[in-house]
Length: 280
Image (tube, rainbow, N blue to C red; front, top):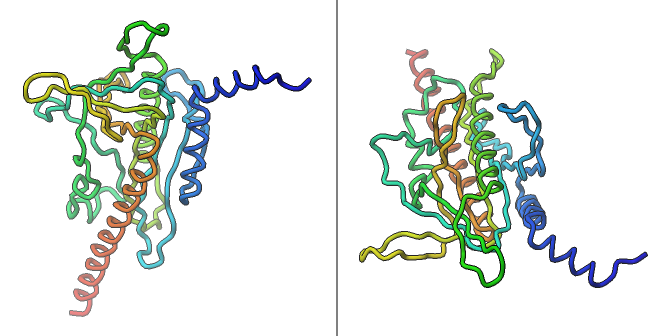
């Protein structure tokens, strides 16, 4: 029996409200741009021991014959939510002194190495180009005509927690990996959790007069607090509107390429110095 027009419209409306179509568009957009994309990636939850899914894992890497034995790349863990009402970020993070924020999660191989002290990774990756926020909330309305309510919905918190725990787990796995003794690659690998929102993203921050000012934005950083092995920690998660996702990822890839060139220059200089020393 064919679907009735009413049921067809109801199904379409349901899918549009969900995050499934958003996730599908994200996968297609990144694949078309040359990213390696893994949708619905199964990962192990270290707390429960059960498998769960990350909406999208993505990375961009192509062999560069001009810079051999150098590997610089970013791994992106992406969760997608289709928010009907705006997601709100509040309270710009004032910076230290008391809390160390994991602005960058990365691993270097070898460790120790000859390049990390030569490069300002925070500057190269433009960590502080946008404001970091320490609070968030979602807006809901129980039914049409009701006042808006601000809250931390369980599904939103679960997505943020999943990104944070997955990122931390991946970094630790690579840190603990045993590399082959003959492996002489220089590696600089980054991990970043990204929450993509299909709806609006706004900030609510007091202006100079102390009045709360609402501003629409395309991207911001959220300092997300959670626990690892019962110890409190935090991680920066990027909150990005769908239309800004690909430009954001491409800027990260461009930064990785610049770092590849820098590492190659450092390695070449060290090799030249060693050769000169041998010929003396």
